[in-house]
Length: 191
Image 1: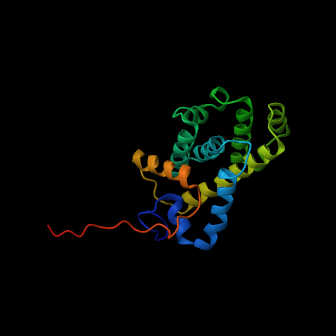
Image 2: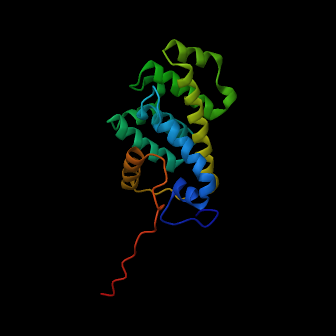
Image 3: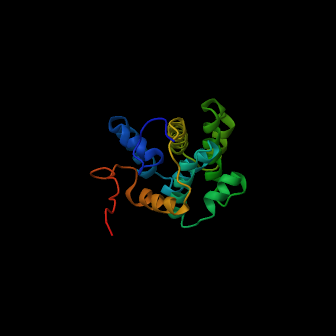
């Protein structure tokens, strides 16, 4: 049960973002820019970064949502699971392995990112901007994960919920829908 009253129909981060639209706006804008804006990393690769961090932070809502978004964007339902199980044996490029290791180090502590991890990323072809954006995405998802868990938001257990949410993330991005998230209509049929 959430620590504060949140809209029941908006689990996870969505209810929190609706609770304070003024603080939600810059967070949503940064997320949209980092995960959907111009980048030499694909949207699927950037979702993998969010997935690795959320999985390592054990944040069920974010882990499930971004795993599904990565699956859809990558066109493969096995890559995100493989990355979460073992970055080094996952079927991703050496550059992505190096960047995902940087994300994993960032999740532990910003100071855990070593010169050796950066050198490995450079040696595998990562640009300075890709390294920068990896650390920033990882840090942003640590914020999200702590926000979701710190407020004890609800994480649905039905995988179908995350199929829908992943599709919405992929096709709408991280912007608030026009008019917000109205409560579902209840059928007041007296039959």
